[in-house]
Image (tube, rainbow, N blue to C red; front, side, top):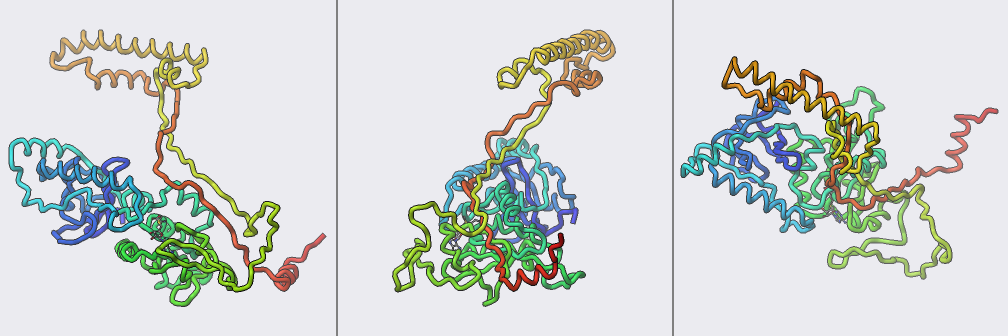
Length: 445
Ligand code: SAM
């Protein structure tokens, strides 16, 4: 819905690179998990869940004065710790960072101990957050990291390349922290789960068939899928896919799209062939995967050892994503800035910029003098030099519309993927299929 209700998952947006997921609770609950307490304490102040429940998504929420300075500082220290831990990618669950950047706290129990703390609490209370509904994008940037995750620029491209769309049956392994899981769930969801009969019989139910062999990660994601109401859309199986493949309860997921985010994806490939693979299987040696020939007979390669080999799955390609964020704004004083940043400043634009500068300066001066004369007499208290007054005057003169539109890229976009490999396994096609197809669509001159 359009409103944040009790027990709904909200994304508390503190600033662009700091978002916290929280299930909004209108009562105290001693629950494990992420930020389900009654109050969210951040360095921007304290935000009792009750002040957020019932607000429309997107609302800016001001901090309440319930925090104490010491608790606020402790929250900040934890946040720093989490950032440090998060920057170290880890595949081990015991090292996985805790999400709790914030502390859970009972509002009534927090009485500022000293005047200093009281002051700090008041200062913190001047902050604000934005209350956002969960989306795959903000879930990706705020989710509890158990592993390295696939970020938005990468999964957008991957989902497009593997043709995930409403109705698609999609296999993903390993599920890890579930970042890709959530994005793919949205991509394949066609509005129906298995519990409902689609109005058009033709409409296929999309589904994400997710696999994860790490027990705790599997459990965690299972719970998140339930909490987020995605049970009909995502089915997660606790499985080593290299050893045991992709059937679920012995049945085929009938997958059309596959995403493998595994240390050794090639070990899972034999299970993704159209007919029984005979030659290779996966074997594990202290958790380090390797492949082993099963055949007793000596292996004779069908490939020419003296020539490069184009592996014959059709259309294999490798890409690198280099997403950039652009900042676009008007640059009113284009001379120095432009030259310094290496922007092209043609003689014409220098003249133009100079002209603008003179105009703007003139506006300031003019306002300054007249403003002082007129306003000074009328009201000694008002300051004509105030920023507001000058801005008012500039707006009147429509100076805000002037200036050159410039853009520059922001230095960093969060992503870690180096290379992605895509391939297509074509549908099997017999001579009989070809004959039937030709009969259906005869070639005419
Ligand atoms: N794509 C995930 C995301 O966006 O959050 C991150 C995946 S993480 C890099 C790789 C995951 O694969 C780990 O959680 C690991 O436990 C799991 N994994 C590795 N080998 C596996 C296997 N043979 N079967 C199932 N899962 C496996």
